[in-house]
Image (cartoon, rainbow, N blue to C red; front, side, top):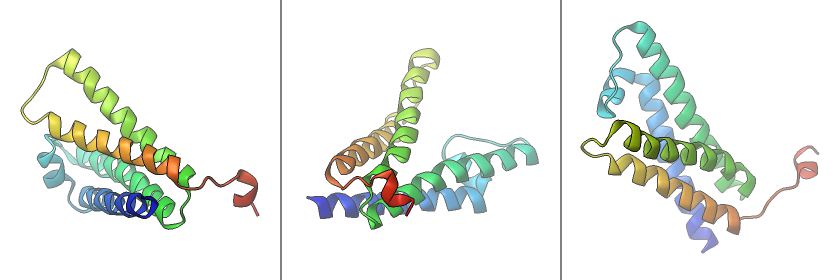
Length: 132
């Protein structure tokens, strides 16, 4: 079970790395696929920076956490994706639904469920061990 969870976390981290690189290299097209449009270079810069950071940090934490079997690193992407799915739920209440709203929420909820399950199974590293 631990091996399967570790592999799934690593593979999902690779998906997030691809998303981050897609925003870095082609923010306009990648953003359009998610319903985003940048009216000018400032918008492109914001999409490039923010989404690359979001998906990149998630991917790096997931992949290193899985590779090193360090469950504590999985809490960062779990918190980010948990925040994203919670805010999407609020947006459904405040703004209403749109076509296909279930897919991003499902992906984010899957991240959270998988990361929390892996966090419970993988070893936790004490701070003293990390600072040696």
